[in-house]
Length: 111
Image (tube, rainbow, N blue to C red):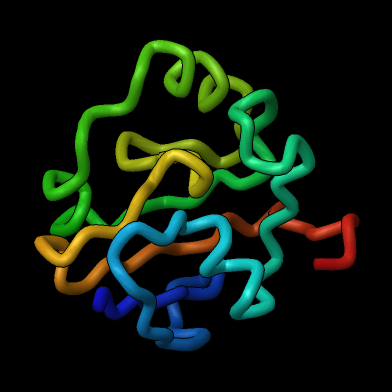
């Protein structure tokens, strides 16, 4: 299991959830009612599932693909540790993963 910590835009803790290895962070966020839209249903065709990964956890993740990097260029409030939640697959090795939801995140899809 991975303990996922979702932080609000200003940095305070929103909620913590446990998720099994193999789960996609976007699906975990949807189940936790986080405001990530994922308008493309997680096929990496948009940037509406953009999250900011805590610096201490960023190095634990595999490098982003060039396609993901291109989409992050379109994301509002992107930082050096930004990733798309649809591209983060949880593993046992992660242990914990802390992500901040950007201030402009809105789920218009009703998930």
